[in-house]
Length: 125
Image 1 (cartoon, rainbow, N blue to C red):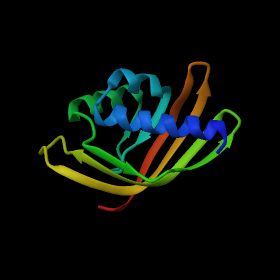
Image 2 (image 1 turned 30 degrees about the vertical axis):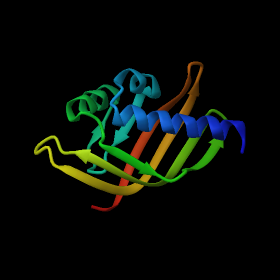
Image 3 (image 1 turned 45 degrees about the vertical axis):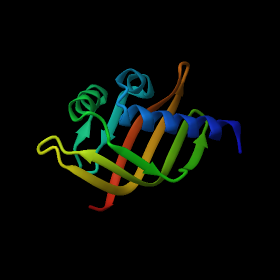
Image 4 (image 1 turned 135 degrees about the horizontal axis):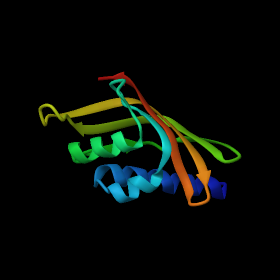
C-alpha cells in the first residue's frame, strides 16, 4: 500500500472518531474553511454550520464503513464507498440509520489533509 493511502485511511479513522465522540476540536482541524457538507437529507452546511449541527445533535451514534476506494491526484484525494451512519434526529431524539454512498474530497494543506467536500448519497432509508 502506498504511504499516502495509509495516511488517508488513518485520516478517515480520525474523522469517524471526531464525529462519534464528538471531538469538535479535532473536527475543526479536519475540515477545510471552504467546506461544503451535503447531508443524506440534502441539507447543505458550511464548516461552522456543520460544527454547530454536530454539537447540537451530540455527534453520530456510529459510523460503519468498509475500506474506501482512494484516488489521489497531487494534493487532492477522493475517498468513496458505502457507509452506514447511525444518527440521532434533532427533532425527536430518535435513532435513524442512514445507508448511502459516501464521497469525501480532501486537499493536502501545510497542516495536513482537510475535507473540502463531504456528501452522503442515500440508497436506502
